[in-house]
Image (cartoon, rainbow, N blue to C red; front, top):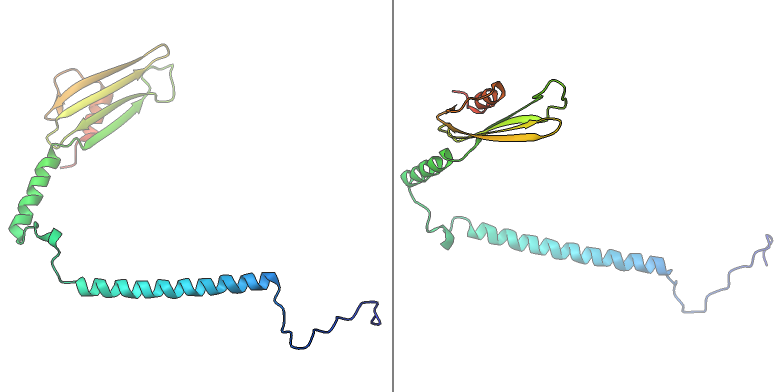
Length: 162
């Protein structure tokens, strides 16, 4: 025993090396596996980079159907624009209180129109006891049925600026 009341460590047998604690051994294994995976990832990345550089400039078989001139591309863009003109892509929603004693802007009018101003107006009027919904046809930015001020506001908001 030592002067402080502790036992002195027992000497190791001759020829025995240092013994690693289980935690230190696990850390060493995990670190080694991490380094191996890092080197493997680096090798794969360099290999893929080389493939990409070698393939640049080559025409792939999937690109054979593309037009080779600017005129062909312009014709395709014009066809897409013609299709897009028929899409109902101009919309506006106006929320309001249809009745003075109701709050929360639960009533609404929705204008949904294409580039020519054709489409529809949807209106939902919310009251205490019931809700009514109306649909009206719109042609050339106008409706042949009578429209409310809120519906007119929705039509105006949906119309693109000139």
